[in-house]
Length: 75
Image (cartoon, one colour):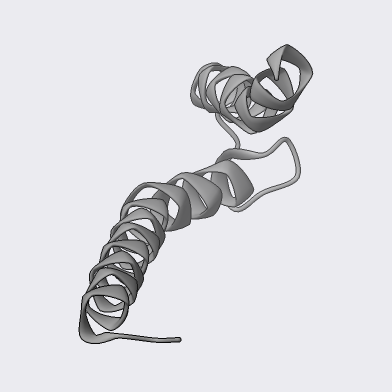
């Protein structure tokens, strides 16, 4: 039922899945965490309110957040 070729393909697929998941998580932390911190700090009631920086990052986050929903709608 499970021969060596099938197990090798499953191992390769699992490795590729783990690689993609880890890279996307790392990418999300590298970009998302600083953006979130800057958004909280520059919010109107934040530690250092800055309307320009807050509005620019807010638009970027809202556009980026809607991309998965657009992909699902197209599919």
